Image (tube, rainbow, N blue to C red; front, side, top):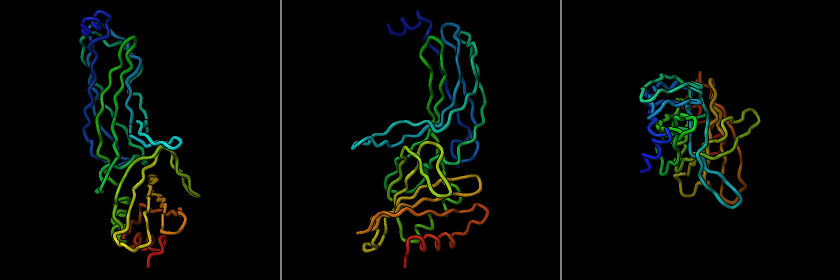
Amino acid sequence: MFNKIMSGLGLQGVTVETVLHNPNLQAGETLHGEISFKGGASDKEINGLYLKLMTMAEVESGDHEFNQPLVLQEWLVNSRFLLPAHQAHSFPFSIQLPFETPITEVACRRNGTRVWIQTHMDVDWGLDATDRDYLKVLPTPAMQMFLQAMQRCSFILSTVDVEKGQLTARNFRSTIGCYQELEFVSSHMFSGFNEVEVSFVAEPNQTHVMLEVDRHFRSDQLLTMTIPHHMLDENQIVQQIRSLLQLG
């Protein structure tokens, strides 16, 4: 009955599907794909065809926390056009992911990070058509080297999630409305550390790192370091971390 009513209103049957050619990629790289769609029972006016880069972010509100979908970036693939009844069309696309896109492929105890492409077809006088396709966002070489350096400094990556908000430091700030937190714990029982929370703010030529250090019986401390992409050296990063965290 619902389908018959929808058909009578001329709203039924508009479908959209997105195929990602390279869903495994690093932040800053170009995602290639194709959007295929088909008209419904009658001609429809399409207001716009969009791609949205999305993540799930944790939001703090008073004493409560909840997760909500967050748009990191949006691209208009095609503006207003007429979609004839039952006709199929497709649009190829190439979009560059922001350098600050959260990474999803990390080994840890609990990874709460999800990143996806949402295709949105804004249908005039109808129900909008959508499609969701998940990405596997790999750490960049600088991020991977930092993760390995933390392991060499006897820290274990425990949890990873995304927080709504902005990071601001003396020489950098985040720009996409959220930041990722990677929580490390020490593998040494009497290390003096409760945890070290790490956030990356990546740029084309360098990656900034903010470390929030929580030690036993001491107030939290915010520290920063910058990794230039043209001179990646894991031993040097290890030394920087040991100096920042005052490791013996």
